[in-house]
Image (cartoon, rainbow, N blue to C red; front, side, top):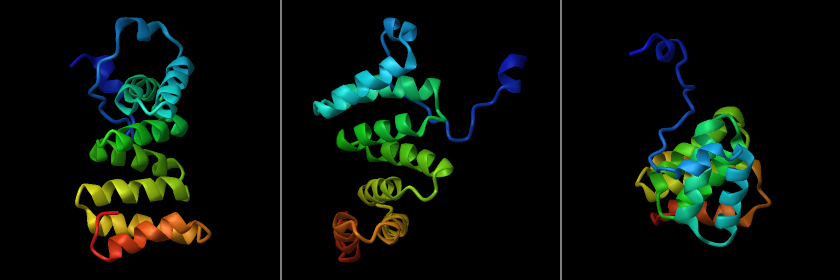
Length: 147
């Protein structure tokens, strides 16, 4: 390995992104990629939303807003493992983010990791006891159904 790579390791929360971005995206500002991903996410085009969001996250892995949006895109596209990675990254810097705990719990549940899922759904429910949806999915998991 070149010495420059050895001296500049990626942060622990930097995920490996598998999608390929068109060449023109390398010239676009990160915020433009983020906004395009959000628009696609809002339009329900979850697979395509993941592409610019993954590139934005590759460029700025410390930006939790990007990581959360990418996690949502992965989740809605049925890619629960990668979604869990993104929500875990959010929780590394924001450990009391109820929404990240909720989404991580749901993603873990759908990958078969029930024990870990239960922990995060319980945290989300306790952080925001006013959220009936958090309690609903926690009860589903407690009843033995995927949350």
